[in-house]
Image (cartoon, rainbow over all chains, first blue to last red):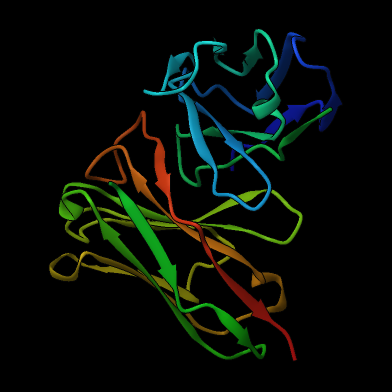
Amino acid sequence: DIQMTQSPSSLSASVGDRVTITCRASQSISRYLNWYQQKPGKAPKLLIYDASSLQSGVPSGFSGSGSGTDFTLTISSLQPEDFASYYCQQTYITPWTFGQGTRVEI
Amino acid sequence: EVQLVESGGGLVEPGRSLRLSCAASGFTFDDYAMHWVRQAPGKGLEWVSGISWNSGNTAYADSVEGRFTISRDNAKNSLYLQMNSLRVEDTALYYCARDRWATVTKLSKWFDPWGQGTLVTVSS
């Protein structure tokens, strides 16, 4: 199975901060990498697909980059509604594994 | 509005069975592959199983292979997960989610949207 490792596991930030979360795959996954946001008590929501494509309706403050084994999710200016957990997911090969998550806290 | 609503969760003893359902609405159900993803309390996301639009392809995580069976009824716009020989470690919130494509074998997929989940607790 492909292991997905996110860092950091949690971070504290302030409104307006630029936040970067990284995700590393245990083998190359080309650009088959998605990012999801999950707020407490809610279902995950797709933010980014294919490493850098913004899902419809997602604010432009979110961006993704990377290919191969190393990927990044960036929030350009953290908003109050962005405090949540974020997960990466590889969709290169089954099982379609997720990272362990990154909690973004105030 | 696209909507997925899971049901069927509950408290069950180890070794017993449970069947989850996911009712889909607001889109053409048989245009899409579907998945089950679970989340243990306070933990991360784990993909469980997926099924193509015509049930022609299915896939399972190693942790549930041979114990869980995914199925769908396109006439009823419904997805199912039959869970047998349940273990304590199967305790989780189970989500159903829609694939980007009609088949589970196609690359460049995503899971969107997701239902709100149904809680399965396995305990004696």
